[in-house]
Amino acid sequence: MFFEGFDWGEIFKATMVLFAVIDIIGSIPIIIKLKEQTGSIHVLSATLVSSGVMILFLLLGEQILGLFHVEVEAFAVAGALILFAMSLEMILGITLFKDEVSGKTVSIVPLAFPIIAGAGTMTSLVSLRAEYQEINILIGILINAVIIFLVLKMTRIIERVLGSGGIAILKKVFGIILLAIAVKLFSTNLKVLLGS
Image (tube, rainbow, N blue to C red; front, side):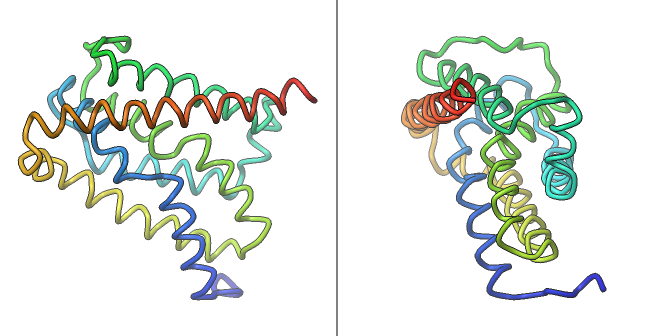
């Protein structure tokens, strides 16, 4: 039965783990930057694609990576390189990604993947699956999808509250944090890859 194994405790824990890893609140400066570059972000597309990627990875993640003979660690290193490039843009005020991408395109890559549903999220889903029932993790993903949708919808309000100066400061601060996350993700997973 579909609801077999339903557990509020597991749902809460899975939701909190995913919320921390996705870190949609911490991604607000990146979202604002992408919005500035393209003019708009397709909130529903970004939410549906990121949620779809997470659900697909929950159900078939290890099989999909195995099909292409790609280790989870290699997947994490690739995600780290993209995050590294984005952090340099934020810190140095340079443009590495082409400006001609549309709001629709940028809503999928890099927003839905790898910013929202990135390598860290994928790795966490594999770990959660070993501990919790699939139905509870699935509900945790759906709860996070609602949070993602609301935050993406409210970026305009957040932008107005912070002002251009506040956004500039946030970009630099979160750029450094994002750089640190990218370096840690890269070095940790590269060690595992080289070790194997």
